Length: 166
Image (tube, rainbow, N blue to C red; front, top):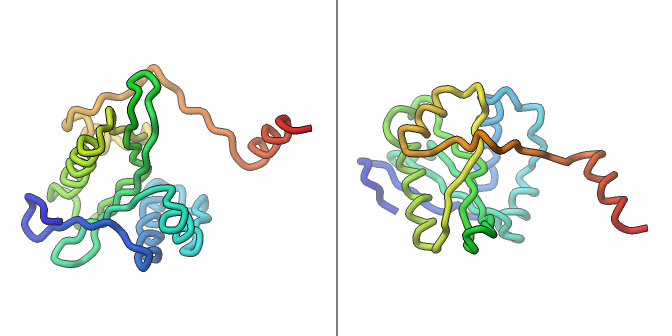
């Protein structure tokens, strides 16, 4: 898909992009000092993204070179009674930052949200990532300071699941 940026196009990822998607995930995790937490594999991504269709990925290409990606999925707002788009990851390669690529990818997701009759586009941002926080605020994003994210995983997830069936 053409964009308003010269030489920058977007496309939905295909199954053959699993290695590229994993590369982007690892680069993002490295930037966030979380690389050891990445256990995803190409096979897991192929199954989750393209067989089970649990999420979607958009690849950003500058002069036909992959330079960015966004991984997102639908959530649902009971208050709105409508779906939303949750952006799990947005990453632009360091040498391509400052060219409007991140803004263009978010603008595409906003357009997609409207086309799909979604009420929201939302994402998380690490508290220490001040450049991203300022960038998001300039786009009109509002931090949800009154909310705290909770997570149950690993052993705690298995323990909680074990309380369901006896």
